[in-house]
Length: 174
View 1 (spheres, one colour):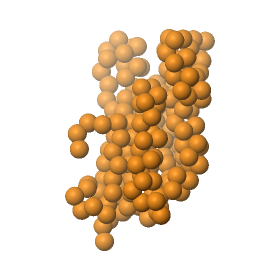
View 2 (view 1 turned 135 degrees about the horizontal axis):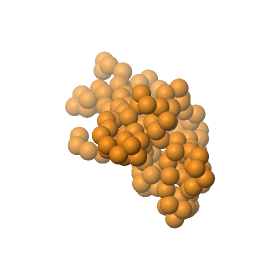
View 3 (view 1 turned 120 degrees about the vertical axis):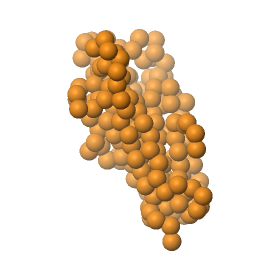
View 4 (view 1 turned 180 degrees about the vertical axis):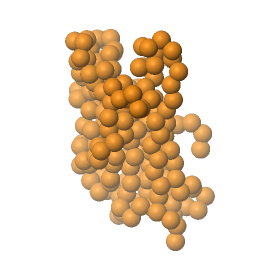
């Protein structure tokens, strides 16, 4: 499938894989599934992807594949670990640019500087589609040292990091 910020799976098509993964360092991994489990998606939502509309595009694609089985409010979503708004420091100009498209994403860091809360922007997009996300896995990658964080590694001066994977699997084909 190549490299992309979103991958939508349709298990009714035998040429489509049954599972997909998305890798993130500090961005928001979003997993989506339609009722019945035959349609699913993985979405990598960073600052640029939030503004560009990668999540609404994936949601529209899922609902467009099967209007009867996948309506926006009927989709299930899970949000994984990402950097929180209290730790994601950006310039005031960048925060304002993102907030112009997604006001919920504007934040202030714990240091009192401009920040972005991309996960809050993701939650707002999902709520706009009538979807409440499962956030049991949503922890701050910067604050939790058992998770990889590109920004934490960079601030520590070594720049070595890994990725967090979000994996979704469709139901088995009949």
